[in-house]
Length: 399
Image (cartoon, rainbow, N blue to C red; front, side):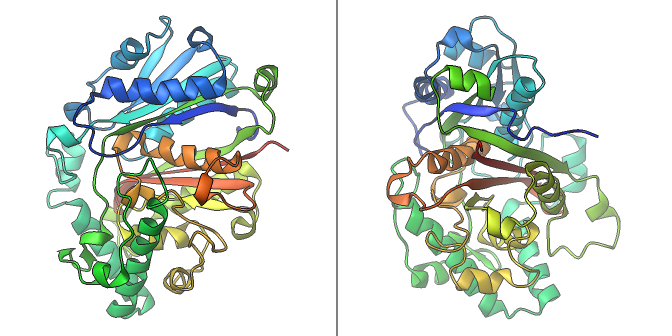
C-alpha cells in the first residue's frame, strides 16, 4: 500500500507577483519576478535546482506548448523542465510534480511555477472551442457562469433552500472575499463592497450576479521544494511540509448516469477524502486552520465547504451566514481574497493558494495573519461541476 508523501517534502521558498492587469509585462517578466522572490526566500543558488515544472493552462493564449519559456526566462542550468496543464488545477499540478520528484528521490531540489498572462489576449473566461473533441462533445452549450448557476439551482432544489436565502449566503461569500482582498497588497481587487451593492448587481447567469463571479488576471507564483533534511542544512527552522496532495478527475459518471443530482462536486469529495487520509487528519473541522478554495463563483465556495466535509450537507448556507468562514471565524476561507479578489491567472492559482497558506504558517501574512495556524488546505476545481478535475493539498508544520 502506498505510504503517501506526508512530511517527505518541505517548501523552502515561495514567491508570488501581484495579480491584476500587467499590460507592461510579458509572462517571462512575471515568471522572473515570482522566481526571484522564491529563490531569495529559499536561500539557494539557481544551480541547486535539479528539475522544474511550468504550469500554464491556456496554451493558445499564453506561453505555448512546451516548458522552454521557463528554462529561458529563469536561465535554468539545462535541467529537465516540463510544462503541465490541468485546467484550473494547473498550478497545483505543477507543485504536485515537483513534490513527487523530491519525495521519490529523483532530485533533491525542485521548482514549480505557474503563470498566466491573459488580459492583453482578450481572454475573458468564456468558452473556447478548440480544446479537443471531449470538450466540444460534452460542453456544446457551456459557459462557466451558466454551468455553475446550474449548481446553485440543483443545490437549492436538493436542500429545499429559498432562492432569497441562497442569494444572501452567496453575497456573504463575495462580501467576505472583498473584505479580505482589501488587506492584501498583491490582490487584483482591493476594494471592500457592501452587501447591498452585491445583492443589487446585474445578473450574469441567474442566480449569479456580477459580484458572484471572479474575473481573470495576469500573474505568477512559484515554490521551491526539497527534503526536510536538506532544508535544515540550509538553516531553515520551523519547516513547512506537504502533508498531502490529491487529485480526482471526472470519468463521465456525472453526465452519463442519473445518479448525480448536480448539487455537489463528486471529485472534490474524492480528492478531499484521500487528502485527509494521506495527511492523517481524522476531523478536518478541528484540524484545519484555514482554507483557500476555488471560488470561481460564490456558489462554488459554498458547496465546496460541504464537499470538503467542513459543513454538513445542506448546512453550508447557514455556516456562511453565521461567519464560520470569515477571517475571524472557526475555519477562515479566502483570507487572501480568493479567486474573487486576489485574482485568477489560471495556471498560477493553485500555487497562489499555497503561497497564502505558506505565509500564514510562517506568520508572514501581516494584517491577515491568523492567531493559530497549524494546517492549511488548498482546493482547485477545473472545468464544470459535471466534468471537472479537483485538487486538494494540505500544508502544515513539521512536528
